[in-house]
Figure 1 (cartoon, helix red, strand yellow):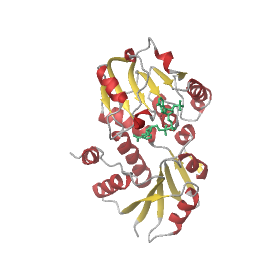
Figure 2 (cartoon, protein in one colour):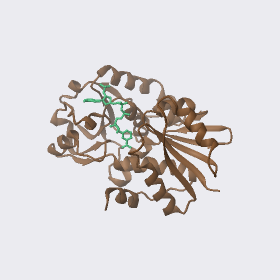
Figure 3 (tube, protein in one colour):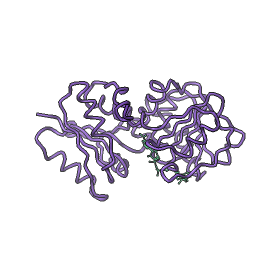
Figure 4 (cartoon, rainbow, N blue to C red):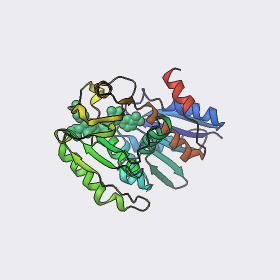
Length: 282
Ligand code: NDP
């Protein structure tokens, strides 16, 4: 019997996950199926239950994307520390009566930075732009890499300040999550006169073509600028390039977070380079 997996979202037509997991399965010789499921905005839990009850083989797990990651967090019967810190779940594993919730986005970003881009966050001054779900998901994994500094900057300053305080006060005390650096939060005007080695754009500004009011000095010498949005050249990428930074988009993070989910489910870590190349059309 073939093990079954799916990704749930709304919309879901654009999802690359079925293609990525099919490539991983072929590469590692794993017998599984992976489908994309459009769930109604108020029908996520029902869609997951229907998926688990239907089909020829056992339902073993699911990925979850916008707008259901918070609902998946509540649906999970157990959660990993990194899912707790993210406040969101993008990977579910079905085990007998348990539904285990994890979040692989932060691990995906860190792996892309370290293994694909040769940019180890350790000892770097990191600027994280944005304070929404994507930013929240990567804070703990970044802190665990022991950067020199982590500053969260957001259009709405209070959200950045609240997020930084939350991590400084609570998550650093979770088992296995001891960190040296306490994040700080600010608005964009607070970036004036500051300089960073790694600037990560976790805002959705690029989706609407909006640019961010960043002082050019934020991109320090040999800075890496990471745009979580992928598949397009965003104003942030253009700004960073003009300031002399090395620029990457979020396609590598997408593939690496999928590889982490595949590893959780199957106990095998697929090679990501050929999959990344296939998605880029190389
Ligand atoms: P949210 O809606 O939760 O948060 C959006 C964030 O962007 C907020 O901080 C918001 O600021 C900020 N923002 C939006 N528009 C602007 C603007 N014009 N100027 C300045 N700031 C702006 O979204 P997510 O956190 O879930 O996702 C953010 C991005 O990350 C998305 O584009 C998504 O595609 C990408 N992503 C990529 C992944 C990958 O694997 N590559 C994985 C996950 C996400 P404010 O608080 O002031 O509203």
